[in-house]
Image 1: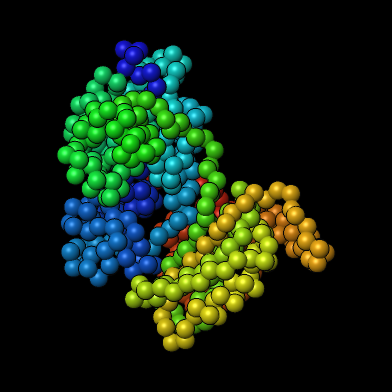
Image 2: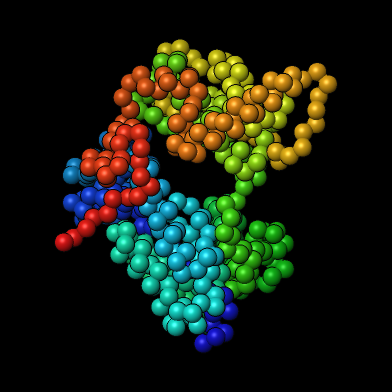
Length: 428
């Protein structure tokens, strides 16, 4: 009935996305326990076959092998995962232009008003979208359909993997009664603990409390969730990528760990370049910068400092990065990851000119940065990069090991040129 879907929001979620992509690329892996994360030494993603044997994300590989000796361990192929993600969202946009890319493996779509165009119910349309993704990409996805983003996400999580759950307005209470508080999108451990102390056990217990009670106890975030669970739209489907509000963080793990100063610094510089690329994409400039080095024992050290002026240029920041690195790096220590944090972000608009600044150099650096961005847009990210990152090539790295997708490159592809198309398994 019409009043059952005043709004129709679809949430599409990839099931064990990374391993599902690997199984789509190599059909022989289907039905086998597969994990990714060989380059990190811990599991980044586990297939449902691996999960059935007790293997979970974040588990060290040596422990996973004990639980499942026949485990297939693969390096993470982030390029292929990104391509499959793009294809998944492109399929969703065939049906509606209002699509939000929430993460690499999940997104929302607003289907409101499309029944007349496609001559079918919202449930049929949602199934059609999910089936198109499964059929064309060969990956497993779960779909949820309801009145708000929160309810749609609860629906997609309700039956996994390859599940579909649709909850119209008149059946919301039935879904909420079956869900514990920690299943609600936006409730963290501390919030769940607080609500349990108030005598609540399920999402339904929270949703039937008075509105003023929810606002007074949890303020605006809790009040928004209360409305969303009752079918009142608070969070619309956002088609634009949200800009960072507070910080930009870039981190990368490498294996094996290294105590080579030049190599570790090269890894840090690569993160700095990636962070500033993102800052320029959103027209932001940081006023503060921090670096962190993570040791093999998972401990870490870091320092933060203020830039002498806001800048979106990597070249301006590298002297400070080098100074912080020299103070943090310790000889003889094995490091496994580097991280950079850009803080105190502000819009890259009109600048306040300083009396004694070197304006010629600032303008030259800005022009050089624009030239680097133009080259990288044409030939790929990091095609033109800092010379310090050349030390990344000193030794082999599992993260850069060729994936099964590159065992047989497509026509026109080589080690320096990749087509923006994932290989598909074709049955004849």
